[in-house]
Length: 578
Image (cartoon, rainbow, N blue to C red; front, side, top):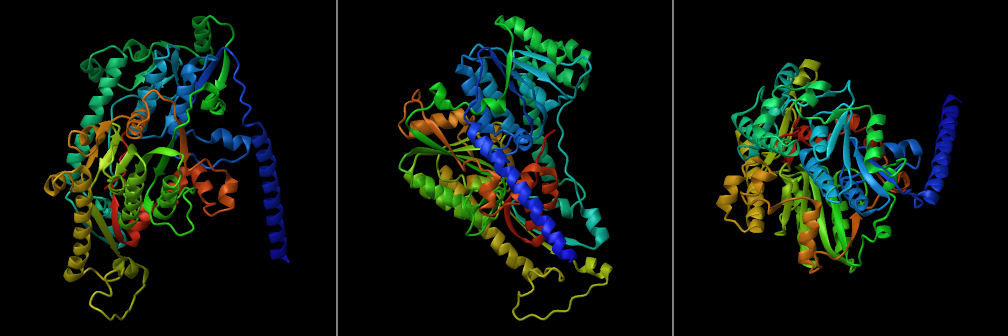
C-alpha cells in the first residue's frame, strides 16, 4: 500500500510539473517573437557566470529562462545588432562573477570594442569586480563602481592540486604512462608538486598572459605598461584607491550612473532593455542577413565516442556519434556555402577524436571550412582541427598539447585496508593487463608503451600532414606541451589570431563571398528545450546545465576515464588563470 501511494504521489507531482511546463511553453512560443524595443533604449549587458559556446537547455519557465546564460555567439550578435539599431542609444556593461577562460574574454572584449566604433556610449558598471570583469570593463569609454565597492585586481596565479599523499594513505597506486615529456596529466596522482616541465610551461603561460593583460589595461587607461605593472603590485584596491590609481573613472551608485548617462544622451528618460530580451530581435529585422548561408558548428566539452542514438543535440560534450551526424548533415545541405567549426575542448578519447577528424576532413572536401578556437582546442581538440584548413585562435587560447597519456589504477593496497582480497585465474600472457589488483609487469608496461607510442606517432603525423611540416619539426613542438594561441602562431600551429569576425572573413574568402556581402549564420546544434531532451535521451544534462559545479564533481568525464584506465588525448591539466 505504501509503495502504491508513493507511486501515485510521484505520478501526480510529475503530471502537475509537466502541465506547468506546457503552459509556460505555450505562453513563451506565443510571445517570444514579440520583442518590443522602444526608442531611446539603453541595452543592459549583464554577463554573469559562464558564457558557454553551446546554448544550454531552455526551460519554458520564466525563472529558469532568466538564469539561462547567453552564448559567446549570442553576445557577438547582440552587440552587432545594437551598433546599427537606431533605437539603442547606449550599452551599459555589468559583468559579475564571470567564470570564463581568457579566449572567450578576448572575444567578448573585441566585440565591445567593435561596438564602440558605432560612436554610441559604452559604459561599464562594476559589481564585485575581479580581474576578468575589469579586463572586459576596460573596453568601455567610462568605468564606474559603487563608493563602497572593492576592485580585486592583483595579478594572475596558477595552481595545481596533487593527491599523491592521499592515495598513499588509501593504499592506491596509479600507473601513468605518457608520450611527450610535457604530457603530465596524471601527475596529480603520482607527484606531490609540479614537475620541472609543468613549471616551465605554466611560467611561460603566466608570463605571456600577464604581459598581454598589462598591455591591454595600459592602452585602455592611457598609461605605460610599467605604470600598470607597478599599480597591480599594489592591488587589490579600495574604491577610492582604484580611482586615485586611474583604474576607475568615478564612484557612483547605479542610479547616479544612469542619471549621468541620461544627461549625456540628452534624449529624455532612458528605457532599459535587458540583453536577453534584446536577443529576440532578429538580425533579419535590422537587415543584417543575406542569402548566402554559413554554418556555425559548435563543439564544446570532452571528446568521447557516445552511442548510436546520439544526435548531437545533447550536452554530453563532443561525442563522435552525434558530432559526426551534424557534420554529415551540414555537408549534405546544398544551401550551406561555408562552415565555421567552433572548438572549445581539452580533448579526450583518441579513437573518437580520429573518427571526428575523418568526418571533418570529408566535410572539408565538400564545403569551404575554417576552424575557430575558443578557450581551448588542445590535444584531441587540436587533433580534430587537423584538416589542413585555416585555424584562427585567440592569443589566450590553450592549444597544442600534442601527446598521449594512459592511466591504470592499482587498488591492491586499498583492498587490503578494507579486508578485501581477489583471487583470479588467467589464460594469456597479458590477460591481467587491465587488472586493478595486480601491479604492471615490465612486459605489460612495455605492451602499453607500444600503443601509446603508436598513437603519439599518428598524432604527430596528422599534424605534420595538415600543417605541411616535417615530422621532426612537429615532434619538437609536440611532446604534450600546451601553448597559448599567441605562442602557437609563430610556431606554425595556428594560422591567425582573432575571433568570430576573422573566421567569417576567411570562410567568405574561401567560399568566394564578398567581404561586405551579408550572410546568414546558421548555428548547429540549434537551441534545445527540455522537451527536445525529454523526447530523446540526455535528460540528465538539464541538471548539469543548472548545477554545473555539482555536476563537475559528480560527473567529470576526464576523471572517469582516468580512474577507469585507458588512453587519452587530453590536456595535461585544466588551466584556470585567476
